[in-house]
Image (cartoon, rainbow, N blue to C red):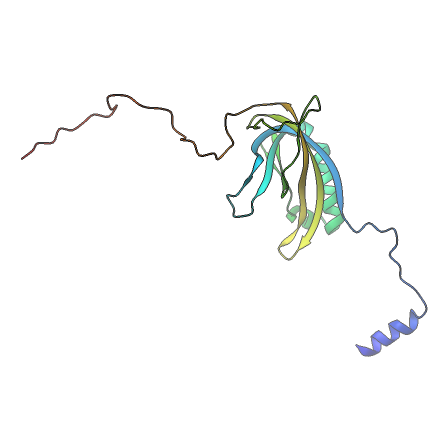
Length: 193
């Protein structure tokens, strides 16, 4: 092994290896448009532990999702290479569900939410069914558990707002008010004996 290293050094003597103007980051900016299915834009989702994440899942019709999928797959291909088997196993931030494609974006930081007339939405709570544009940075990764891409969420612009009365997960009773004088269940009479 030492002889091989010495041979390499003598052959490459005097050569300088410079990495100038090389972009080591494998990422692209993508602006997704779709209907929000799973939305945590006003508070972090802590279901999988602290510190939690802001996140959104967008439903996009399959006919409109082709460009987004090609952009994401090009980032993955640049990360893992053009080998089809490796590309098929790579983790993707989208899933095809029937005639829709569900894209998942997330962030550690609260996104700025804008209306379509370019005004900030600070006091509105965005609920499922709202349509929106989400600016994302698609970033490739290679780790011991596998390779793939993730969508890091940036600012959000709401097209059609479906608004709720409270933040998702707020301390409210999830049941309707059922204050009635009589029970709807039959009562069994108990004999005192």
